[in-house]
Every structure is written in structure tokens, then in C-alpha cells.
Image (cartoon, rainbow over all chains, first blue to last red; front, side, top):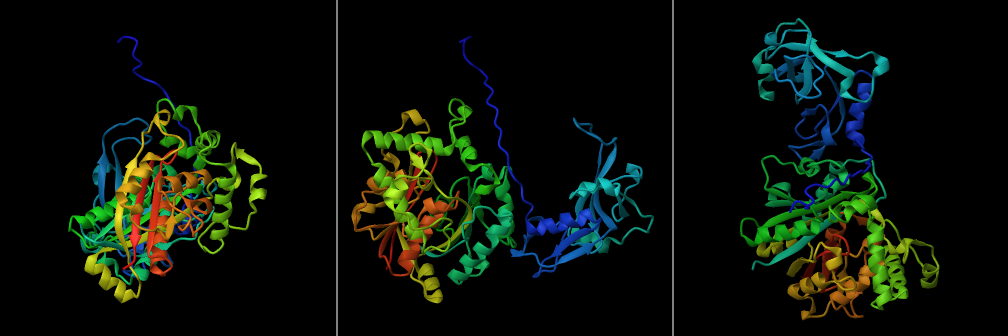
Length: 163
Length: 354
């Protein structure tokens, strides 16, 4: 019994070439120019941001034309992160929010900074803070965070349908 | 048992690589299958998908595929981590339960995402075989070597299979590889994994197949509406051999023999057989296992040798067999799908016209 092998290591290494596809590529190219590019569903007219997979999941059709959205948006909902975890790079407590960019039909996730966590509200108007242009990649990480614009909060009716 | 028929299908043209995402590849094929069936999405009772996360390198990547289906209002769907042909079996069972009358089955794979020969290694026993990293082609070559040395098949038979499939593929617009090859020319070609030559090995491809199946009177009325001839599933069965390569019959396919027997392949003549044999020697083994005679037209599509989109190629064989019933060139056809090293799993489907 004491001679039983209880554990072995069998490392696996496979390399993959990931392709974003033509629809998401258009969005990623936009990020290289400091723009948020979404895509509109030709059937229900919802603007997907980002245009994940290039399809409208509700209608089952390919998305059609590019639509520039934002740059400002509205916090639809949020959570305050209080728990430390391995690899955490942001000082707790911090806010992770769903932001409905102006003109977009779906909210996207991002960080809210430059405000105390307990002052963040649903309906708060926010704008992106971009990294220095020379650090831009085809990634939403070009935006380090969103911060309050100082505008009055949006009416609940303007974003309530996106919760 | 409820009568169930394949009433329509669609395939993407096999390509060696694409920059489209799996969902972008799926959507036009799913749409085309619906058009060919003359159906709206809302008329599909059950959706069933076959794919493999190892090919995309993304856990739960199959969940994304639902984006191609227009899943609102909510749909009833399922997924198998296998070729779409095995998803068709699940859909056939679902119809047998009486819960639904129609199903759209699809299989897709993007073989170009990584080194497919190496990715296939991960289907082997993870403790004692996979750590040695034998690639898919090498595993197949061991089987081919055993078949040749035992006298079960000859190198000339392998070349004949390669030659016929590539010739047949010339009339299949979806095939990736095709052409006229002289048998002696094939036998003189360089070895890539002794005793396999390049055209003994599958043309790995990115591809999609979608098939619509329906029960009894629903199938009859849908086929009447779209002006097509349904291919009735008269027998369908799938069987599996041991995962332990050392514990397997290497020059025969017991699971294919059993599946063929259970599906009733030998009960009548077989006009056409579409066999999912990725390697040339495997087609010879399958022909023996299914006891197919010289009067059976084997792989008029060119088979998986000429276009092998993983997780779609088996369902494509069923679609091709059904299409031969549909166009009247066959009254009784066999569609076969396989999976695993040395064709460990075998699904056999007998199709008949009215």
C-alpha cells in the first residue's frame, strides 16, 4: 500500500491561434483609435457593445452596421469589491460596474475610480479614462477605468430597461 | 418506435482555415438548413450540437454557439462533446420520447485553431499514453502497419481508397481536397507516417454541418411543403470499444460490426454508404465491418479523407447519405460516424426512401 503511486504530473502544452472574427475585429480596431464601436442588429436594432460573436443572440441573425457609441455612459448597476484575492492589482474597496454607453443597447463591465466607493450610484454619469496613446493595444484595457463626469444622474427610466 | 426522417441539411464549404469565429461559421449554415427544410426557427422543437472545447482551447466554448440560434423566446437545446452525428442520436432519442416532433442538429469544428494532430493526443488515456504525446497520425499509422503486416489489407487497397475518394470529391463543392490520382503514383508518394502517405491522411478542415430531422406525419408534411424526399431512419445504433489501445482488436472494428448489426445494415441491399474513415486503411476496415459488397457506392462525396472538419465530418456523412436518398440516386443508404483513436466509437444509421 505504501508503494502506491498517488500522484503523477503530466504537463500539457497546446498552442492555439485565436481569431476574433470580422465582427469583433471591427470593435478592436476602434479601440486602437480611442473609439467604442458596437454593431446594430438589423432585426431588433439593439446595439451590441462589444459585438460579441457578431450575432444577435435574441434574433439569431448576424449583426449589421458599425455604430460608434459613448464615450460617456450611465452606471446601471455595480458592486463594491471588499475581498482581497491573489493577483489583485487595485486597492480595495473598489467598484466594478455595468456601464451603458450612450447609444449602446447592452451594458459592459468596467472599473469606477476617482470617487469613493460608497458614493457610487445607479444612474451616475461616467466617462472613460484612456491610457497614454502609445500604450494602446486592440483591447478594452486601453481604458484604465471610468470616472464621474459631474453631470446630473440619469433618470431611472433611461436605463431601467437594461438591468 | 416513432418514424423519424432526415428532411434537410446544409454544410459549409470545407476550408483549411478561416478567421471567422465558430459562431460566425455556424450561423449561415444553420440558416441554410432551415431554408432547405422550408422551416422557421420557431418550428424547431429541439436543438442539439456537437463540438469539442479542446479544438477551440476555450472551456465551455459550446455555450457561445447558442448565440447562433436566436434563443429567444427560450429554446430547448443540448450539446454533446462529440461529432454532430452523436448529437443527431440524442435528437432522435428526444423525438422518441414524444416531447418534440422536430430537431435541428449541428456539428462544427475549427481544426485550424491549433495543431490538430497534437490536440487529438488529448483524447488518449491521460495517465500512461497521452504523456508520451503520440499524435493522431502516428496512432493511425500503428493501426495501418498492423493491418498490412497481418494481411488484413494491402497497400494497394489503401491507394485505391485514396484514389476513388479524391476522384469522387471532384464533384463535391464542399470538399477541401480532390483530384485524379493514379494508383501507382499514390503508391510511389513519400511516406509521412510510415506506412501512411499524405493522401492516406485526412484533409483537416474548418467546417459546419446542420441537419433537420422530424417525426412521422410532421416529416411528411414538411417534405411535401419543401418538395423534398425524406430519408427515413430505419436503424441507428452506436457502440464503443475499449479506451485501452492495448486491449483492442487492432485489425478489425468490433464496435462497428455490432452497431451495423443492430442498425440492420445487412437486412437489405445498400445503394450508398458514406463512411467516416479519416484514414484510407480505415475505410477498408469499415467496409469489412459493415459487410458492404461491390454493389455499394462508397463515399460518393469523397468522405472525410477529402475534408475532415472535426466534429462535423461524421454528421456530414449522414447528411450526404440522406442527400442521395433525397435526390433519388439511392433508395437505401448507410451513414456512419466515428470518433476516438482507431475509430473507438462507431455510429451507424440506415436510411431509406419511401
